[in-house]
Amino acid sequence: MRFVERNSLVMQKIHLLHYGELALKLGNRKLFEEKLAANIRSLAAPLGKVKVKRLYGRMIVDPQDGVSDEDLGDVLDRVFGLAYHGRGYMEDATWANLERITEEILPGGEHSFGVRVKRAEQAWPRGRGETERDLGAFIVEKRGWKVNLSKPDIWVQVDIVNQKIIVSIEKRPGLRGLPQGASGQVMALFSGGIDSPAAAFAMMSRGCHVNAIHFHSAPYTSQESQDKVVDLAQALVRFQPQMTLHMVPFGKLQQEIVKHTPQKFRVILYRRYMIRIAEIMARRNRCLALVTGESVGQVASQTLRNMQTVDAATDMLILRPLVGTDKEDITRMAQKAGTFEISILPHEDCCSYLMPRKPATRSRVFELEKAEESLDVEDLIWDTIRATETLHLALGKTPKVVGNQDASKTEM
Ligand code: ATP
Ligand code: MG
Image 1: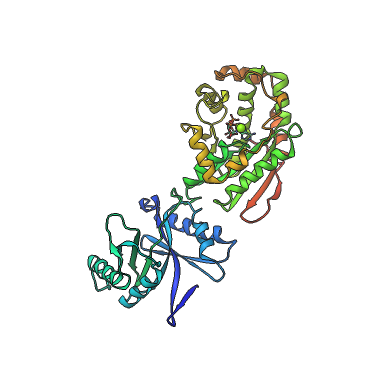
Image 2: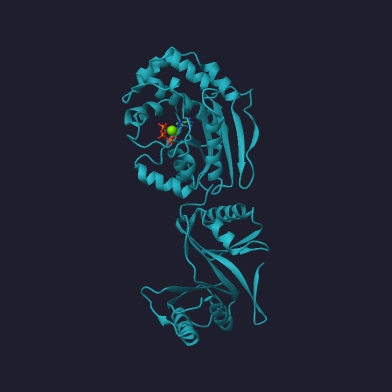
């Protein structure tokens, strides 16, 4: 617990959290709150220990020894499910304590201010309005500041709950969304581009725990392009402290497609096999949906027709969180996720030998099914899955290979 010494009295420094949408989830509220608290603890773990307590529609984080306010503030900036957060002081609910911690928390200089009180404590002797007025008068007397209730420089927020008072003047916007992990697991198809990490980030913000899968064309493509994908996933681990990343060697399957099918269908056929393999990996890892970074019309492979033919290759739900988002907004999202700078580093997505000169924009399911008849790739799919390398990524740790896929499983 951290204390501030002042006039030989001590006061407890905490961070006050305001939920976002979470407050609406009445039925599941407890589960959501527990997820939120667990996420805060694990994202803060590299700094040290923090205590998270629920307090009537608010939450407080109590940093333990060695965890600095600034570092904890940075962690809270990365937690999904928070509308706002800010540093504050907490004390037993007495009027003398309220005045004392208010004086302590107010900055120097001349400011306009307003007081807002939230009172959920029956034993507190003054009403809400009365508390606001009296504390306002105290601040005017001590500091000579002017009250401004429409647009003050500083809102002094007072929460009176559970026989405690919390005073906070900081309101940093949170990431909003839902606590990461509260909505179940998804498998995100992860390339080295700008879009797919942004799509994964969008699903995290809806409470999904994201697993990632990448298809690489080694030895046709370089080790650097694989490293880049690992770096992108590692960047997202700042928001989701653990992530599994499957690296699938896709070159042999691509070669078969190149050899035996019309050039114009190549990209869609790659995508259909990626989806099939991703589906198997998703089912093995208890994921309920696949996620891609597609956006209608962005490139030739992302027309409505082509999306439909990709969908036809799987029974699994495919989520495309960026489907109606333009590149500029996607870029902004990728910047927020901290992946943009990595994504724009030059890399080869796929070598030119494997890419068609003129990809089809209007593929039909029957055409692709026909093209696939000339492929005998069932065994190759399973060989590919067996050769897949799985990495475990964790916040503050270097990625670790946790093994290859179980060769004994061959069911679809
Ligand atoms: P991105 O910026 O995500 O690479 P893109 O604009 O390059 O997307 P495409 O290459 O058409 O578009 O890919 C569309 C989606 O298909 C990607 O967002 C991703 O979800 C998936 N995808 C493409 N290539 C791969 C790959 N090599 N491994 C895994 N997923 C992939
Ligand atoms: Mg790409």
